[in-house]
Length: 456
Image (cartoon, one colour):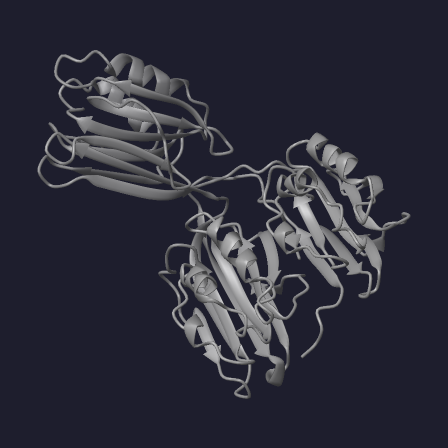
């Protein structure tokens, strides 16, 4: 069994392209190949025939994709020794429902899996992971909290010596995307409720009779919440229509009727809903349920209506997430870390060009500009009696949201790495800080207040 050795993290940093049309979909092909120690000892990931540039290791390797198929995050977990099992549980637990996840075993991935890590992988739709044996090959194209409706061969387990495993699927996805939203409407006798969820978090707001509404920002944040009484003798139709008409083209609105939203819903209010993509306004009825995930001057992402007594309406959709262009469009970056006995090195590459910088014991760091240029390089001694933790943490905290940082440990970066320094790494998307050890190797391609693009 190969040793753990130095860590090299290699990813092509891609952000979702600027949106063209919110409701567009396309078919995406995903493929994963896995080979245990006896069957080739590799793990590869492909999207639409293009192999992702990631460096894999012993254990389970995971790729997380944006719904438009660009790379969101990559991580490896040592489930042979078990050192990475808890990090795997944390990583999967932090994923939003609906996240697309590709999983491949390499070398040996079963020995250190425990019940919690097996359960975490099962939340991605895996049904065979509990049967993974010594040096088996395992491949999965999964969805956090769900399944792929167009999946064919989305999971493959192959016994050691029986050849590599391959999983592949087609799925329909928005060209942009990332925010999971859900809207529930219940008329007077069908729950009498209006509920809104963004990335599985319920929106806290007062609700009332009539049309309840949530306006979303480009990043999925809740900009404002409103209730308009459009029921019997209610006066909410005019301000309701005015608010919808004032939305900018492409803005997303969530609408849910509660109790009675029909009796005084005016033609102008209905027209305003149509202006957000609604096509079922004519089905809104007295004390009925009605929900909409709408787009101003665009096609609705989801809509539903039911008559009183016919049950509540519940909708869900992936709303496009507008990601800041700070995540280096198309730039290939690579980070290598070697602890004291594993090469004793820290190396950084941008588009295959090595960054020229002095490196030393502790945490070595490169800050990148939005165009991929190297803004600055730093070394912080966080080893035994080193005093680098405080300035290291301060520098990370001062980064702007969306900025990219490359981090590599050298020699010993652990002995005097303070809690504040670890928290600062977490603020750049790190989830494996708890796995750092004396003279161990650690590498991160992080995003300030975002998900790490790669870590190990």
